[in-house]
Length: 151
Image (tube, rainbow, N blue to C red; front, side, top):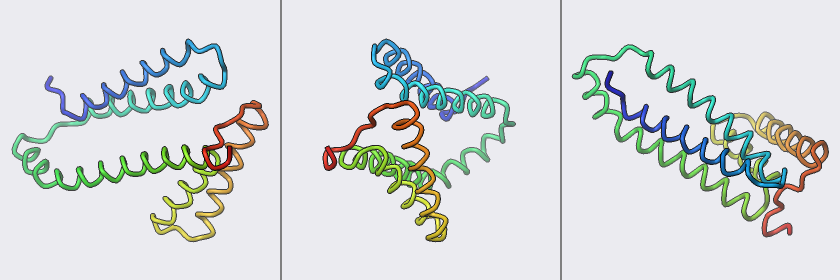
């Protein structure tokens, strides 16, 4: 069976997550290995599910796929650029203001750009930030990265 390019990307993501988990687990510090391991496992499982779904879907005819690819190649590129921009923006936010404030800013901004109300955006950002703080700072007693500004 011929695999789509999407399948190769998914397999690459799975291998990357296995590498991250294998690398981080060797660290003697719980602070270093906890979050990347949880995220790595989560991404690995979701990617495995998506790969399974992609392999099960019925394939359209070759002509339909070609016309569909030509039509959506520009759309997919713009989506890819948007996703990479969000990821890089979040990483820059974490670097400068820390994990907890960056999560609040990121979630609020994303929801506002998705045309959610101020109340829903602010409420979700507050709940997410509170949950991250309570789980990692209070319950697990881990010092999350504070960022360059708040150090």
